Image (cartoon, rainbow, N blue to C red; front, top):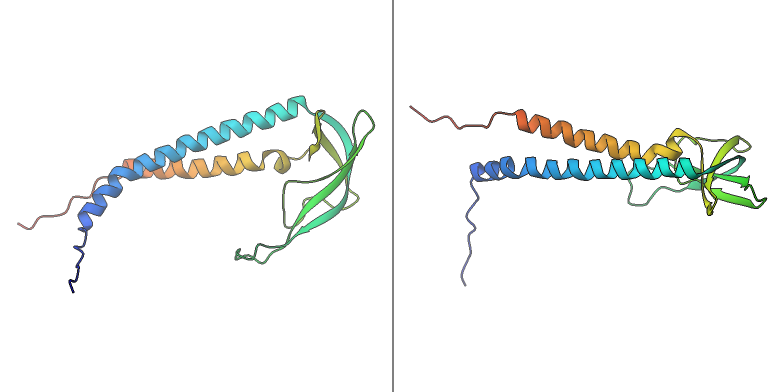
Length: 163
C-alpha cells in the first residue's frame, strides 16, 4: 500500500496568487455591479415613466415566515393592496418588498403605479418599493470598489532577507 503525501503549497505562492487574482476578481465584481445598477435604474425609471398612477389602499399584511435555513427568526411582512385601473378593473396585488417592521398599515391610503399592459405587476409608490434592488446593488458595488482601491494602494509585501 502506497501512501501519498501532499506537498504543502508555500505561503508565498498563495500570497502571490491572491495578489495577482484578487484585483481582477474585484474588477469583474465592480463591472457586474455597475451593469446591475445601470440596468435596474433604467428599468425602474422606464417603469415610472410609463406607469399610470392611481390611488390604492393597503387591505392587509401578508406574513412571510422566516426561511428554515436562515439564522434570523424574524417574521417579515408584505403589503397587500387594492386599486382600480383607469378602465375600471379592480386588482389586488401583493408587494414585492418584505419588511420588518411593516412599511405600511392595513387601511392606509397609498399611491399605486402600474403599467397599463400589466396591472398585476403594480407597485406602491415609495422609495423602497421602487429602488430597493438598485440601492442594494449600489452598496455592494461601492464595497467592491472601496476594497479594490484599498488593494491597489497596498504596497506589496517583500519578505525581509537575513543579512
